[in-house]
Length: 183
Image 1: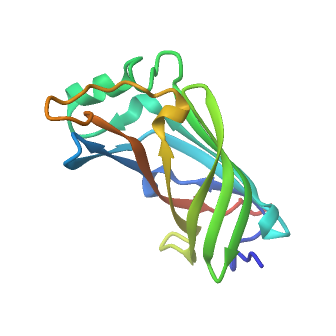
Image 2 (image 1 turned 45 degrees about the vertical axis):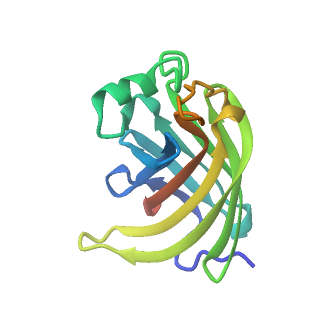
């Protein structure tokens, strides 16, 4: 049974200052390149039956940061994210299945105009009241996707064999939400 102990029903707001949405992808078959997004927003609509909770996370794709400006510009181009035509990535939460704080979050990921069901392995980290009296809830989650399934297909063959960028992309989220305002 899904429980979100300490989370009241209502719309919880994503706190971008305490959220990190990142990814990693294998580069040249020998190392990983990591990146994250600084432009994130969203909400979690906690239902009376926590399993029926919904929500949405919106990521501004132009905010990608891989710690390399030339690579960031390439990733923003039409060869990868095509931010001019697809400025946002969204994840719509359609269900929550957590037992003892661990389980899955089901939803639909839209990237580059393609929407696919994506399940996140998730952990509910609990609820706390911060030093300023704000009630917060934290989650971590991860998944892997095939970038080709989302029309992100650019690649380059390597002289020694293999390709420059793997198809598999790992996505990791550390998200924090603030409680609904009291009426």
